[in-house]
Length: 290
Length: 325
Image (tube, rainbow over the protein chains, first blue to last red):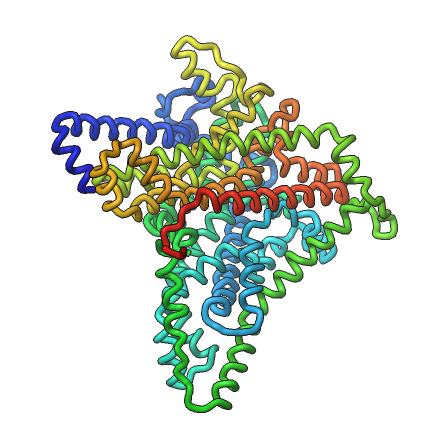
């Protein structure tokens, strides 16, 4: 920083000019980043005739009509059903991931048992395993159980800590909790279960919150597994419901499509507003500080 | 870097407090060993039932003609037929390989370059960094969704907003998503648009580069470019490596945008047929699950090989300043 400060004072006006140039470039990039989102929002308020010729972000005659139209666009089923389905799966995933990953992470981060290093290496390896590789046999398995078209194939694996990313995130977090606390609890007569209950669990709150937020957002946005496991319209989630807009071409469906797209992103966006600092820092704590 | 700080408490505080009685210690240790497996049991069960068994099962399926509609006694062992068919008879297979490699080889480096460039710009700013950082990160949060893929499809269609913009400059645009020559490029733009997540990681890495190094380089007469080349890049190499591995593996697994933009077909004319889409189509629209399993295994081996290549070549250019050696 000192070097930069030196060049700025030394360069005088050219340094200030460069600073202005940087801000201009950053604002231009920001325009590129935000335009698609603002355009989606604006288009969701445009009338069918206006949505056709459409570079502008701001509708000339804003109308809410696209929202009720989109909500009941699919015959027989409203988007409310899709939202309920998505919400059930996302909330169940949040709970399942939180519980199972916390318990697993405690074993890896704090307990000494035979084979720990090997299992930890296996867990890291599954982190890089593409889900598309497992989808066929898992489908056959869940089909055998009769679980297709229920939320079970999407939730039960999460109960078994299959999201290695969150296990890893929590292990990293727990390594930062002072060991002296465990030892004090042990001297007071706590078993490994007691240490978990009275030391690790209460102190792991921040990691649990991060896991909950990311679990929710990723499940909410997930498409591939929901597409595979939820074949009938009554069990569709929001992303699968949105897909139905692809088939219908023409101007009349464009407005409702944008409206439902906006609604589908609203929960994620609200999470972003509420927890933006945590989200941005969250991706740092996970990967780098290891 | 932070590597050592995270490890310290783990090893440092293991000085055994209970040296008093041996039998008691071994009993405690046994208790802890048992507790370890109790806490690990959900994960172990998941590993066996949801990961390991399905993997072996899919290896078996890849040597059969299994489809989900037939009953089990109709399943025939076909040996290496699926693999032979893949490499010699399936015209879409090589399209899928080519499309996936093109996508990953172009979109991933460009995305990382954008991420690093913006991070370098932001690193110089003192005010408003938090706001810029959050807003740049927003696409990474939303971009993988079906909604954004639909928006992209509308924006880059023949009469979409992008062509309106081009028309403003007097250029007659292409029907981007419906043009075999351009459909994949629109997917790449969507991927690059989500540069925020690696950018945030780069930014954190840049903050860790000690300023003394720049001072020393400046004293030695190094200009801005030499400082970047000889200080920033080597110091940032672990972060670059991390982002490269992560984004490449993510790149190979792109699915949603290709599915939505091509309406599940991988078209026009195979141009957006990512490998994952090919697996999906073979398995879940054609119901050739044996064949799709074979596709999956080749995919897994390919990703494994790429990871190995990264980690072996990484030794030559990733510079760890932990002082391990």
